[in-house]
View: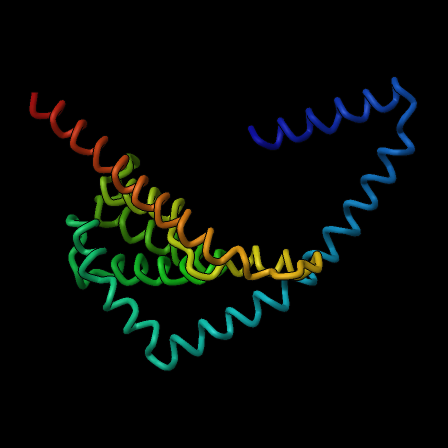
Length: 197
């Protein structure tokens, strides 16, 4: 569906440019946008490689395991249906740690693995389980301590202080995570109560 929307917007834009005689400007915008995208990607690669390397060092040194064990009691309460030693719990914790360091690219495969394990726990049903919904809500509104990608973009565009975003991002993501958990719990209890009635 999204592909059709993008194609539709592109076609409408080109037709509109032909009618108004601004096709030259559209061509320039397309090529400048492509050039800017490549430049931005190259700028992001260096920062992401650095932080992914730091993540690997943290993993090899055991720091990631210590952080995971610190958050384990909270995560076990958030996912009461998942056994504490189940592989899904490990993937959920790893995904949360990667998101905390702003490493969405590293967090995505961990999130997919977590969902696969949660689906197995759900008996491979097509309907999402309570744990799957909770994980999706938390993953979407995850707490971010170091917004690596945003810092990289700000550095790429020569920001005077690219790390100024750290404080506001941390505050915002903490509130968004709390809101996501509260909304998730509200709808879960509402659904449970309807089921009992």
